Length: 194
Image 1: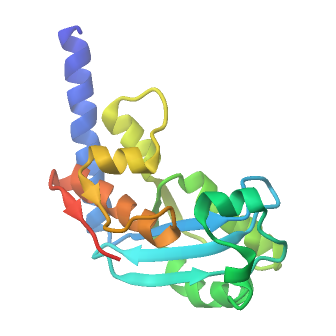
Image 2: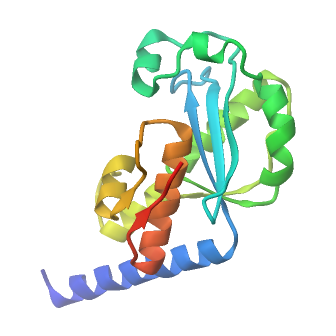
């Protein structure tokens, strides 16, 4: 590697560390969703939001209008039976929009999470929350100089972030995302509990 390339990479790593420090100082919220799928008809079936201190603000299942496909349930473990008595998006929306509006929201794949929230809002004819979305997945890609995006679990492992009893669910994923931002901002390994 040429010295110029090495300097460029080091400067970018420093920039991402500085970015994470600025994000943490801005008192962001960390958000993750689990859904009925990936397409334009997908709906939220679970939402979690934590603050910068790791305090859980929202951790709820959500009953979708359309059933969760079996192949999707196999990925995140959320079944139609689990959401039978859960609140619908309209009810959750009324709870979360007041503290999402105008806030810095950090998410691992922010484009997906913001899109799925917008889609769920359209389904219920609700205005989507106005927030400042930032993508931790993109930041991590830039920080590590990867040419491809890295899975959340791999990024967390690389950053020495652990969540005991971690499963692919919204709350665990928000805590992993928080840990990655803290690690890059401070260089300290993180063990976060649910």
